[in-house]
Length: 358
Image (cartoon, rainbow, N blue to C red; front, side):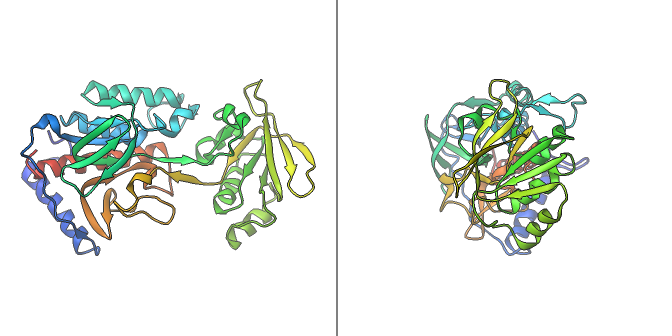
């Protein structure tokens, strides 16, 4: 099945365009394609056509497309089934839901939709991989797998403070995404935690909605770039506090953030800051530990891709291994962009398998 074909495009033309993209990746953009051989001699039952790592928006969209193509994808749900949306409350910026939809409900709907076409799910996480093998070999918490293609959609986990009160109020005033949740804090006082560019960007963005934004940093000096720090300092709605850590998020019993109990790291003195929301601006950790040395990662561990979803090793394209979603997107990190890249990865998997006779 070729749902990826453009209108009027034949299967042969679609294969030809895939080959052309591979040539572009190997020459015009300075990327070499590693040689690919798929062992088709083994029974189909022993080798999956595709395995998808991750069950957030990217992984489930990839599951939907590959399932509709008859590839019977296996989705490994990972340590955080459902990804970031599983801990999000109301989602108002995903198209098709005029009144918004709860994050877990959206994930549940996507999972059911892919399952309807034959996607399978397994509660397991990746422990090791041989990305250069053909077929690709996966070592998971549930056993070993072999697959002709692999879609990496394992996401990036937000860094949290680790406070029990913080964890209890995630989705109830505690958030790691200003773009996602800032709108809900119009005309309210909020706090942003962090001292780098991410925190400055969050604070500046949130100032569009909030009455006041207090930026809290545990150290004496901010590590943000000069230009971002100057913008935050000059903003009339933003107050910066250094040498300050959060001891407790108040409002657990009420199930909504009521304030923060703060401690000055130098004097030890404590005080309370009344806010309605707390945003974490201390970064994300991409879930790529198993791929160190297997494919190219950037300095922070995000997967490097070329032509949107093609992975590389030492600058050369790795055949049959594609990446999508937040695991390779450090800029947008939105549900809709993750879904879009999941679609791209799935279409490339279909074309790759078709080209190799599967």
